[in-house]
Amino acid sequence: MSAAAPAPVAEAAPRKAGEATLARIHLFDTTLRDGAQTTGVDFSLDDKRAVAAMLDKLGIDYVEGGYPGANPLDTAFFANKPTKHAKFAAFGMTKRAGRSASNDPGIAALLEAKADAIVFVAKSWDYHVHVALEISLEDNLDGIRDSVATARAAGREVMLDCEHFFDGYKANPDYALACARTAYEAGARWVVLCDTNGGTLPDEVGRIVAEVAKVVPGDHLGIHAHDDCGCAVANSLAAVEAGVRQIQGTLNGLGERCGNANLVTLIGALKLKERYNRRFALGVGEAELGELTHVSRALDEMLNRAPNRHAPFVGASAFATKAGIHASAVLKDPRTYEHVAPDLVGNVRKVLVSDQGGKSNLVAELERIGVTIGRDDPRLSRVLEELKEKEAQGYAFEGADASFYLLAKRILGELPDYFEIERFTANVERRYNALGELVTFSEAIVKVKVGEESLISVAESALGPVNALDLALRKDLGRYQSLIGGLRLVDYKVRVFQGGTDAVTRVLIESADETGERWTTVGVSANIIDASFQALVDSITYKLMREGATA
Image (tube, rainbow, N blue to C red; front, side, top):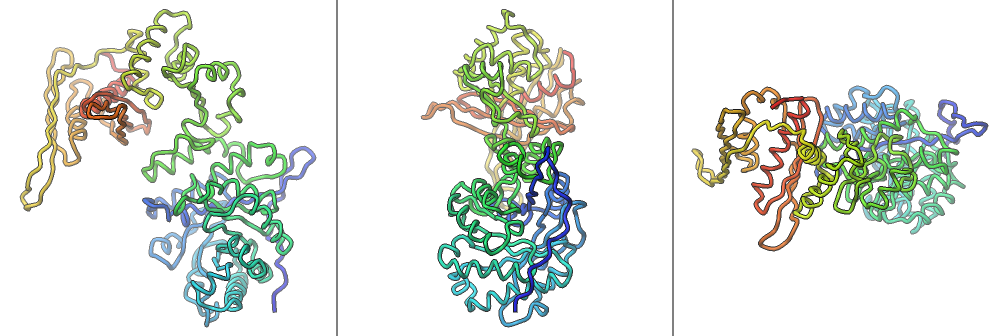
């Protein structure tokens, strides 16, 4: 016999906007569980704690930490609750067929975890029940019913992720609905509809969710969308329109295959689009919204991933304008080419300098990087001419602010001559080491002149000639050495500007220092080592400028 429908979990009173009461949308983050399945992503225990704290501060309602009992890392993570405000959720399977939930070791591990909520995953597609689980449809329903009731009796908030729900509904709607209804009647606070294969389209999601809402109230329904058709965000919003009040997703859309619904994008849309912000409230406040760009990039930094420059709301190019006519309009009124103000999400507007732009672009971009010059200053034309000539050679300053800053300062006569490169060499040698192993080493020699003093430095590296040059160049800069002690190279990108055997190579180097500040420099040459060395020299010169060094 099915249990009575659960009483609603106590929640904070909904906020009001004017006279209208706003319905509450609950955000559920699964970065640390589903997002951890991303190719190349591995969270350490410290990483998990840091991400959980970041999500907690952002105003996320639920943080799913992983699968306690499945591996030592997740078990250790659930030894102590890492959030102060967000509910901490543990993920696991419903009970195995042929045993009771009270005698299932997986459920025991979930109940032992220091978690506020337990998320069970269960099949809701009859095909999977028969083929993957090899049990009867009724046994699967019994597993849902018994598992939810057991966790609820233990005092936990309970959710059921209905895996493959949309595919299951299309194949056998009665059975998919039976899975959702069984979980709800057994006491589940949330019944989450999962588009596990990511192949459902927004109109299908809206139609199916509307049907499910006739069986399970919308304020007990959630959506968990994958992005295999590029529709995860759209599907999540379509589900909200159809009645769901919990959205599951990940920071930056992490997740296996094509990823999960991107919570960063969803937060931006829900908070800033009138269609949603006049009807719904989030746990994310205005101040937290202003940290959205920082949170997104901090996660990528932690994972040593290059942030997506074109990500909605938070990408470095999200509010960047390049074409001259567009840039001129943006300078007059940003609303001409911006759907929201960038500062609302902690981002910045950029009017890019390029051979497609004119003086309006240039003046605005120079001001952004801290160079003030009047529109009638004759030096402005020289900067523009030099810029266009450089870009014709293959330089790209859109992503290399530091090199652009140095170029402008040089033409304006404000760049000190800190040091002069007299010569450099870089060699690569493949040899057998003392253990008889075949290894490759690089050696670099750099001769610089600082004032009247000539300095020669030598460095060896197993990481390649560019690393050897970097080490040699920073080994001894005389009186400037103390100013570059915290400088390090953090990213290195190579692009071919022109194809063929006479290809021109563009190198972008991202550097950082002890303060955490980052900057990017560019070098161009037919020789990749020469291009790299140009970017390395610019990086050091920019650091010395920032430190206020004098020649």
